[in-house]
Length: 307
Image (cartoon, rainbow, N blue to C red):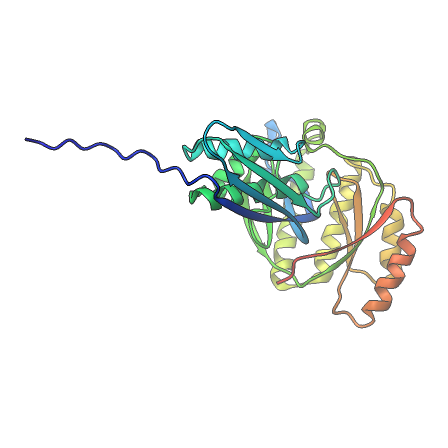
């Protein structure tokens, strides 16, 4: 008599189990543009370079008994709910549970608030289920919801935000201070990316050169070069997302001896980059804040995640 073999049914984690995930935001991008390549004619090849900051989203996911469905708080976090549902489906788990999100990242400003919510959610769901998806697969799942920043990757990375593809890791820099001014308003990521103009061949070649220079600058820890490249990217972005404080902040940067400017390319903020290790930093910071507060908008301080 031959014994039959039956495949084991997927094991569902016990209801009541809780998982927590976190993810950082970014202060816009050190560089954002598009690269030359075979997808040039169709508008592909767009990329950004992250600048991680010490602002966080935290997700708490709790499994519930079958049949209750999935709830999310705050109720407006529909993108995070969609990702949690997609992950539970991929893991062959019932889609029952509660998702609670908290964040210190302002929304609609270009600080990767949605991306941080989504990555934190993914990490919380994976913590509960014990299942994993690769960063590549997670990138695919996020970009099925909206263009996304590369906050699932540590350090400063070049990332294709429309395809969810990690292009390269540039490295890490020391902690930097950003004196930022928010010119006001909100930017919707989906709307901006749908309407954003394309890049012609000369622009793409220029961005390829800037990315190469930025990779070398970050690798060498050359903060002056990083600031120069970031400022160029902020300048180039004015034709796509104008910020009326750019010229004034450039003057402030020169006055206080800052490293350069950094822009939220699909947001409302631009900031002056300062090096806290520089001699006279406290006076420099105080002077920069005082001058920034004279501009229209709201002055804020951000710290980058250092090495």
